[in-house]
Length: 305
Image (cartoon, rainbow, N blue to C red):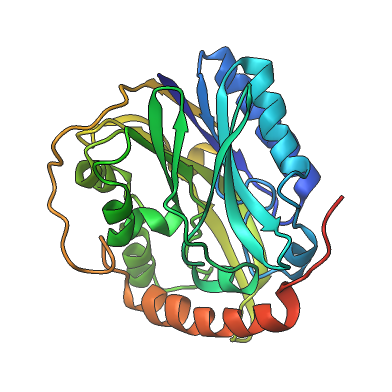
């Protein structure tokens, strides 16, 4: 299995530009021989506290899914990524679709929105397990890679974990000692692979963005932390693209399958603990604000063409 993790230079809420970037990079990955191609979480939009995102939602069969299907057929590959998906019940979810040349193999909805993501979608409850031929894949999206409950739902049941992340850094002006703490926990894929005992593929975003700061005054100016990566079942890094490398792909050969995990899972909610700023201002305050903002502004937003 030759896997590719795509890292896009994302423009917040610019669907057309982001889809074109994803298509270009997926074609590049296919030229390098990849037969599994992973796009980032929110590959259509990126993520930030931007009201325009309420207009950047699509039905399950919409334009983003059609791109995944077109790429899968064009390259005889398995292609996956997540986007803001408006379902028939009127709720938006962060839905990951895995496409093959024969159609959509399955879907996973991220279990818990992170921080300001709560403004734009609600969580899901599925097990995140999708079979493609003789490979059983588990799906992980961003902070799902840092939650023990993800390991519990997937370990011993899948041959590989694939997905994408949208990690953002500290706001411009944050003291350096706090920035270092925020950056310390985002490189989670090797640890997750050792806990799972399976290979892991994680796509990512790069580039700067600006948006209002939810629940607080001022502008949040930062960058996507990138880090598209591929690890084997022992947590060895087979491919890595640093944030400063910008858009591109990492490609590596992996062997799907399960080995004895080499790291012990604790009973903690987080695999790697969050720094105080992320835990209290991000996870708690922005989560509280976002759930109320979604109830007022997010649910039932119009379907994009």
